[in-house]
Amino acid sequence: MSALFTPFRLGKLTLPNRIVMAPLTRNRAGAGNVPTELMATYYSQRAGAGLIVAEATQVCPEGQGYQSTPGIHSPEQIAGWKRVTDAVHARGGRIFLQLWHVGRVSHTALQPGGKAPVAPSAIRANTKTFVDGEFRDVSEPRALELSEIPGIIDAYRKGAANAIAAGFDGVEAHGANGYLLDQFLRDGSNKRTDEYGGSIENRARLMLEVMQAIAAEIGPERTGIRISPVTPANDAHDSNPQPLFNYVVEQLDRLNLVYIHIIEGQTGGDRNFGAGFDYGALRSRFRNAWLVNNGYSRQMAEEAVSGGRADLVAFGRPFISNPDLVERLRRNAPLTPPDRTTFYGGGAKGYTDYPVLEAAE
Image (tube, rainbow, N blue to C red; front, side):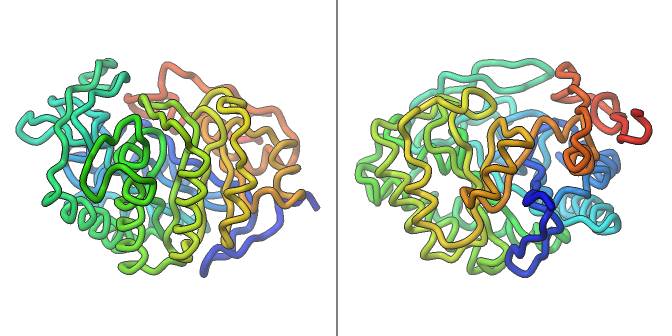
């Protein structure tokens, strides 16, 4: 049997295969950023994944960076997500929630009271966000006050507790792609001179305090994190990422997190971006599950798992247009290409209307 289709023990869960549905922002939350019945259908259609990591979900109103993205901070949002998790579990699936604070990757139109987004330092990112159906330049952020940081940590803790209340099997903190935790890590976006800036240890402090708070709240066996050491996504950059991420992974290992989800290369793009970065050095520093991501084919995924380079492999865009991706990979069947015009926003078209294999044949 192919290694991709062998079971894997993840914390207290037994995954039936090594194929993970990566979190994918689709901008289809309803009023109040509440998950909808359509979202429950979408995720339940993909319950054949060994694990689903549901889309990035803001832990507080200030954490929102794109229109119609779901939250996990109101009773209505928790109830909406409960419908999603019930639908996935009814199909025999397993599902984590990705917890998100975008930091400076936001727009005043999305912030409470039209205020400036927050960031480690008042440096505008050279990137865009999705507002009122179009992509716009992000707004100028303000630097978080030292007194506000405990509130950020608590928002993640509450978000994790709310996710478990909503029926999720665990959570993945979004520490990648130039969002808030990643912004603190990198010297390109963090120019602070207090205990959250300067040295590698100081820049990693917020991420590690957040992860410690989440693990203490829901258990490390239900807590994962996503990192992206070299991606330039959302204007993320660091002058020396290898020692930074070597340290980060060593410290995450001490927390006994259930997995690290790592994006290799440029998110959604060139896998060879940042050539020379040693991912093996990170893998050797972490004892638990290693989840790799970015442009994997069936063959690449098979080689990564059978060769011991990874325990799990995440697929993103292929899951958009192939709800039965696991079965297609098992049979080596052709994949349906996605309709990119329906990625962000809209309704059922390009979301829940893709055919499964039998219907496609």
